Image 1 (cartoon, rainbow, N blue to C red):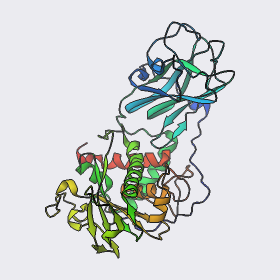
Image 2: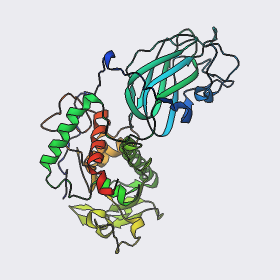
Image 3: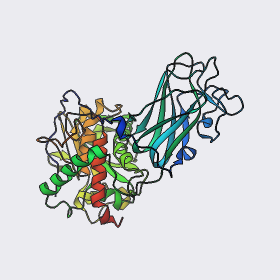
Image 4: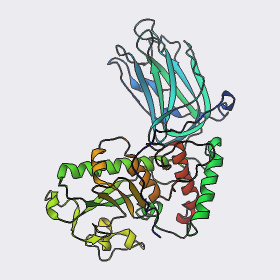
Length: 423
């Protein structure tokens, strides 16, 4: 079953980014059993004065006042403008409120003009809706609908001076989500998407070469081959940049799954094991860091050897691959000169070589991200849009990065397929 091979054109309409609107009445109070999860996080910051301590952010010490001169403090003097303090956990935490104690010495460090909380959704920081007080000599509490994230950021705008914090508490239940718990406003569109998938693809559950199957078969990793369908030369430096960019984009999707609903991997390492070209002279390196396949043509393009590809050996055995299982490839990054869009499926992703190279340092290579979504089974939305959602990455041309709705669609696939792996 070879899926998702239609081209998706690169021209991007004005982006209608997904926005989630919450009314004040939707904010839930912290549950009685919530604990301060900040104590298990790693604290970092945009800047820390040499005589202050970023570790003060979550050291568990309740300040006696905002001008606490006895205990460690985090401050940013003499820096002003926008500053941030960040809590990062090794696995996702479910949070329902936060408590912030401001540092204000009445001089160079003052209460901020404004502040807000942000969560990391796997590809970007998004604002957490709520009411943000700015009281001195007290904890400032913000409650919000439960969010599950690996990072909580306090974003502060300076006012009369630099900014600082004495303590940050992040309250919630912590740990991995035990089940399926999407935001209430996404439940209906997610159900619509899944019903559409089941009705459109009758072999949905029988097909066994999704990205999920590949990652699980490798016990938490993925191997790639690059099909260089171009006459443009590739230096060793460009080769390494291509590998890095591919790894960075793939990781954005895998970060969506970290800590969610029994997903067993915090990280999914990606390794490029081979390159395929028509002419060996195109590749301007002589080291053996990757296998090189020359003039093995399929679909009028060079490809890595079939004997090493999972698409051709879905039983997971590679008896004729010279490097064995370690040098097999699960997917191909097929880069084609002059191509103006993209295609994706269980076999990998195809897009223009010029587009990819020109986007190599971009935070979001949106065509590649879109096509990786197809490799994990996510569908296209050419002729319909789920109820109540606007732009999202898998609706081509309406978003340039993974949105919350994209993330929850991916998690929904895991919810329905995880049992095949005994989880």
